[in-house]
Image (cartoon, rainbow, N blue to C red; front, side):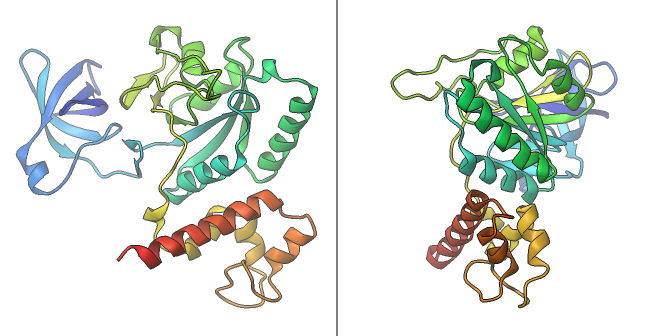
Length: 298
């Protein structure tokens, strides 16, 4: 039996890259996987039996350290959240939701701000403000341009020897950045729609691409909505907002939701400008969203 990594899933087949010869084997899952209700995911480390003609059968899926359901991918080391301040415009609400998604499965989030070469002076000031905000929270922020090549060296350093997932709205330039990093990928890219001011969907399936300097990247379909109902308990949301989690330790009441309680340190910090008001708003929106979901799900 051989070992490998699933690098693509398409039409019921799983494409496994062998750990030793680096060849790709088109595999089906052994029946026992279905019987045990286990579905292979891109990024899974597996044991498989090779067959003639670069075919194979997946026998076992090794334990996962994490998994995402939207998109379906496993064993990710970090998520690179690609955003812009122009076409499409900066969307901090979506960014904070993406960060929660990553934090909820204990995956490092890296913020990539793309298209920096296209910004006017006002947009550059906004970008710098946002960069300082998220760096202040402990997140790595990389400024890039797929057109000019800005940030290429720093991106390659961040990706080296890791499995990285790119996420962001359509049109932010995920595929263009990947092509900049490794032109051999030749990923399809979409133009920005002048009418809708959002990108056309160009990626049709989840695939893990090896980079020439080491590591893998997952190019995922562009999306603008995330279902956070899988978190289940709204009290967990505070853990995924670092500044709220830290300040919340000093609240007067145990179990403080940081939404309406008297003597809440978090609310006090928001009023004093020590916690970003927009981040706090996004926190309360998520708490309310999950509470509403739990109230109405039966």
